[in-house]
Length: 191
Image (cartoon, rainbow, N blue to C red):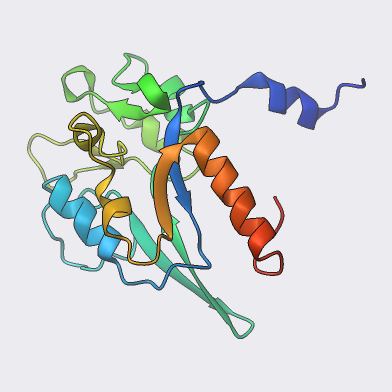
C-alpha cells in the first residue's frame, strides 16, 4: 500500500472507543434556535445584546447560522467539534484545556492564565473569552458534561423538535448518519 497524505492523516488519530458526540443534520434543522436557548439555560449563560446571537461569544456556546445563496437556504450549527486531535488542547501550555473521558474537550478555569492561545489555535474559531468580566472565562461547548454526569443528554439535543441534532456514541452516530444517507440518498452529500 502506498502512503499518501490522506492515508497518513486517517491513521494519525482515532476516536476513543468510548467516544460520544453529536450528529447535526442540516436537512432537518428549521432554525428555531431552541438548541441555543436550551444551552444558555443549562449552562447558566446570560443573554446578550444580540439574542439570538449572530456568532459565538462569551455568552454563547452554540449558534445556528442561516446560509442563503443560489436560491438555496440552509442552517448550520456552530459549536465545539470536540476534535479527535484538538488544536486548542495542543496550544494550551498549562493544560487548562484537555481531552477527557469520552472524547470531550473541557476547560478548567483554575489552570487558565488567560493567554487565549486556544482561540488562535482552533480552526473553527470556537473558544471565546469573556471580555466584559473581571474574572473572565473561556466559553465553549463542553457537551453538557455536567448533565451527562447526571445521566442526561446535552440540552441542545434534548429540545430539538426535528432531531436535527442528536447525541450518542461515535459508533451509534456513524450508523445513524449512514442510515439517513441510505434512506434519502438524494438529500445528502456522501462524505
